[in-house]
Length: 566
Image 1 (cartoon, rainbow, N blue to C red):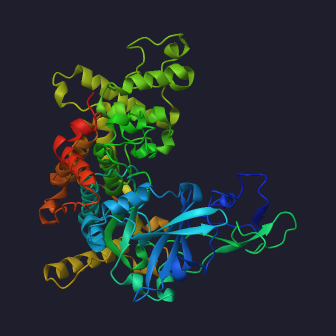
Image 2 (image 1 turned 90 degrees about the vertical axis):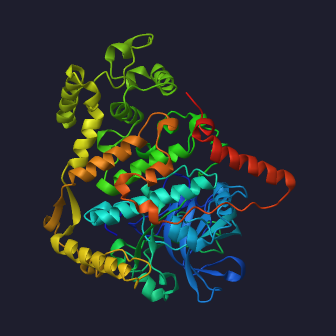
Image 3 (image 1 turned 90 degrees about the horizontal axis):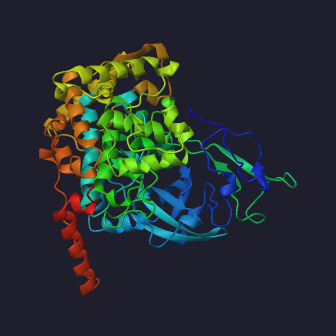
């Protein structure tokens, strides 16, 4: 794998086990295998009733648990699935993933995936192990995440718009079921596979993986005697650690279709997270998420994240909290006010309180930071221009010039804010692809051929274009990669779409229907599936009545009630 980093097996200095040899790869922390932690799984294990799911490879890991490539041996024909085994402490009968599974339960799984681009659990089971009881969730097998798709597909603007539109459709369905995703970002967006790939032989399927299909493993030893461990001696720790692998974009088995997954922090807009935030990274966090305004969390928080995802897919960046400029709360808040204007209440009150707690660390104005009190109007996190740092001096100079321009213009309503001007310039900037000219031409021909077949109704699911050289594992020289300058008219339309989304208050943002019907999508919403109406389950007269009231409130009262008013 091209971006492997050394695995870190530490964290707990007293943990008595370690890897046998130095190992490079993407893996979980070994000391997560303890009571309440991860379930020990090795290649070849059988999971579920009657050993139904045979483990063939690892697909991922995180604080939530591990994800495995498994073959459902009891289906006919046998199908490949992704099985997510939660840590014991995260395994609860009423967890968000199971609630999402129930919310979509009355819709055919193929409809959810193909028409609305949602990958919810198909089913679940429980595993009793040495570290506790673990929830296992079964998903349709997908390829890699959408992270980095622009560098390969950004030249194909029709495909880019298709993919962005699919993300909006996914939110349309999710919100119609009374759910908010809560963690809508590229890392939780997967590329779907072409029809039939889930039924391939193991040998054929593994050839599609980035590492050629051979699992990278390392054995585990006891630090006490430096001997290899096994299940008989240490049942709570796996005998081996497996580095994760993914199916890449150039595998030739990917579909031109996305699927949003990971409903682990999803919630009802009528009952937002008690802590006032879901924990989504700052790059995708709305103002109400950033400032923990629980009563404002809701569908519009997802729509904010959608806007960030659209910009990421369309032009390869997000407008807030860039790592190179300091991925912290102040930079995030500064960029928000730079783009959207003065920070309103209730966000400003929270921000001022943060600065009262840590004024010397957090305030751009040194005099204010050193004062005993912060008076109303003194704290100006954005309008108080930060000290010019050499690394971004040019941007700060442009910013101050734009401020002067806005203040002196007689037609101030036609002048962009400094942040808007900066965003537009960045959207128009030349960027590069991880493709050569020849690869762009090859993939464009694939796309055009599919388009023609689609018109002739001779094709079903569209295949994601790929480079034959990359599929064979050959990478061209970096200096042959092509450059790209966006079209001004398209950027203007995209800027207008984002401007309707990036608003301080949820009530002011575009609805999902307005997003879907925006001109940037060129009428795609006229030819897509309609959201199916939820089917009421008659658990009891009371439950049915409560459900009806909630549905009515959600659909008819709109975000002005559900999200609160300032």
